[in-house]
Length: 137
Image (cartoon, rainbow, N blue to C red; front, side, top):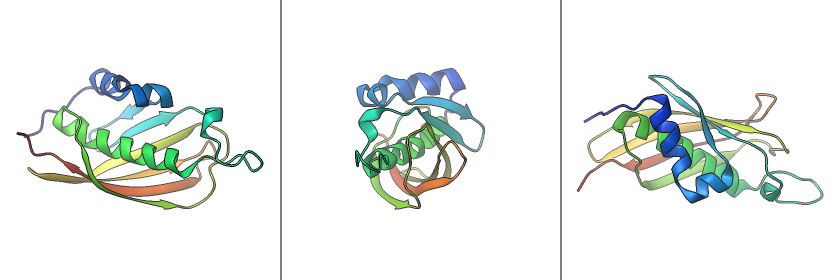
């Protein structure tokens, strides 16, 4: 079932979607057990112009992306999200974010991955878990 990809191939997959390009995400690292996705800061991420914290939807998207590409690294292809949960731990202030994700279970129909998002000071700002459809047609 597994068709693992190398760093260059997975980075190309991460950058391929127009939404991902708008976010500016790139693959930061790939190991046998995990992926790291880098999200550079953008002013458009601000949810509150006074406090200037990052909108929760951006953090959720980053968790989803990281989980998806942790699975994709094992399968050699992207997978659709079936379910996802996010926990917010602190406000993400302006600055780059890194999501670290790993696969918990890779099955023939579904896969589960978990992700954690850290700010530039390596503080945990959000975490989550996604379920992805691995079944092919």
